[in-house]
Image (cartoon, rainbow, N blue to C red; front, side, top):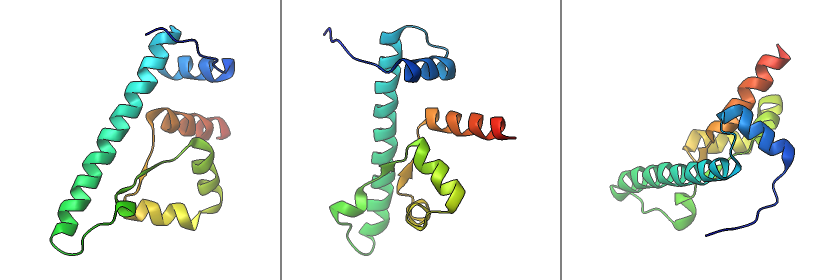
Length: 112
């Protein structure tokens, strides 16, 4: 299916830099596949939590949710130790995308 997308030039340049992928359609495919992989990890984590809870309390739909945390949220957490994100991390309710990890690593090395 052909689709026209309006993409941020700066964001595209960052994605190209981090991935080495120069073709826009390949970048979009990679991002889509990354989301699918993150969903798979979230489902696997939810399945593990469900199996653990099946021995005791049953999980509600809200407890099976996992949050994908963006770079700006991580930066703020690293600066001021967000209690909410800290609790989510302790509970295993947070995912991070490899692009976000790359951004954080590059920001940290640039600051050093």
